[in-house]
Length: 155
Image (cartoon, rainbow, N blue to C red; front, side, top):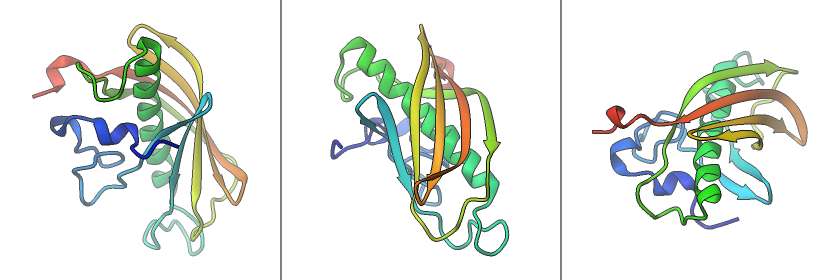
């Protein structure tokens, strides 16, 4: 993996997201990388991310899938244009649609791995399928429709 994730290149004015913003000290600050033709994020939940003792809260799972999907969108956009992550204008994606299926309880206390597969890229839209695994077993999956952030959202 590269030493820097796509989120490390987000401009400061759009780096406050609770899931992936490097400037949000209270957030998850996830990091998304290419791994071949898939994207990958690893995250270890804290003890307070509890649904019931021993299991991860479903809202955290949805949040991780959501932000991994938008990070995937940015990675795809840079790759499609053959650009380095530090080139301008920056690509920043937001969620247009999020679907999450919880397949089995996700254990707390282990590193989670999210993997993204690109289903479609068309214009400013990227659709990806995201799986979330714990101990090598898929416990949730999602579909994220990510769209390039509208200019009016950027200050």
